Image (tube, one colour):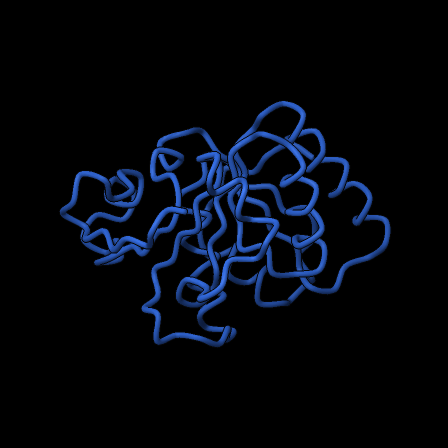
Length: 179
């Protein structure tokens, strides 16, 4: 099992996209567990509000299955119910996945993450210190900004009108993926 690593901004292993896109505003450190090489792959960010209409759910699951079958790298927080189910779908494949929790790295790795980690197709990445143990709305917003910045394209399954996700995603122009 890989060990967690702290990667300072001046380290060559640091996510080049963050330095390129954010410059000196890039997080000073990343904490990572897993295959850092995944950060150089093309990737799609997945976002979905916690509350969403039923019509969205099946389309999101179908999209996750298409990414899985195509071997496409997906990045996300995988925190909302729809995102969690999409992660379960992705974990059944062999494509790369990057999970960005809205807190420090987890102390215990869920059993379903262990094989993908060992296979080098999973990266758990955080900009938060391990003292951040609870997810807050502010940490989730900052995590979503990290995910969107790292991604080549963004897929928003659903953003509740006026909700935090919609508000934060509207603040920056994003390369939206076709549904």
